[in-house]
Image (cartoon, rainbow, N blue to C red; front, side):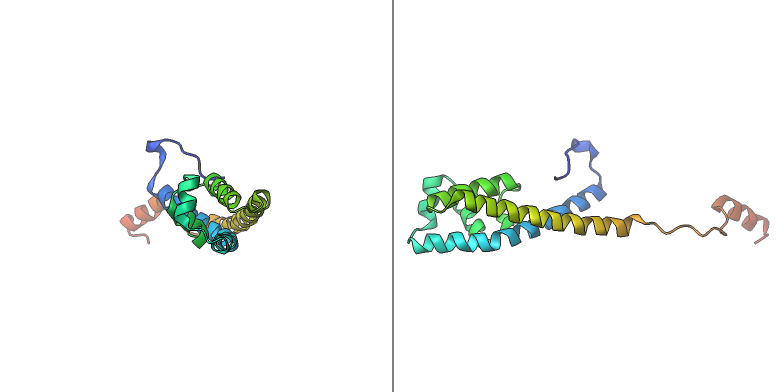
Length: 153
């Protein structure tokens, strides 16, 4: 699941950085998922002698989105698995491929990549979450400054 939107005033600079990192991870994950499926769709289209412009006008899906699916360019697609699945289903159906198999293959690959990304994210969070404990023999700042002022340190 992606981050929840809490309104325009609730997002701070650190959240923006983490959101960018999550978006980069998402795009990386989706690129790997699309690589083999996109190639299969392109081969099927070329095998039938069809042009992307024909398919685009018939399906009412932008040519750039179909190109992005074939080239595994997730940045060229709208964010979200819903669009990816819907466009893939329509494209596979137009080419006469088994849409159920294509979508299930896509969903399986998405789920596997999400699990892998979650594991990596948890490992990163655990590494960042463990702060260094403060040394026990260190005096609090107020006491140190007082002793400094009095010349006792």
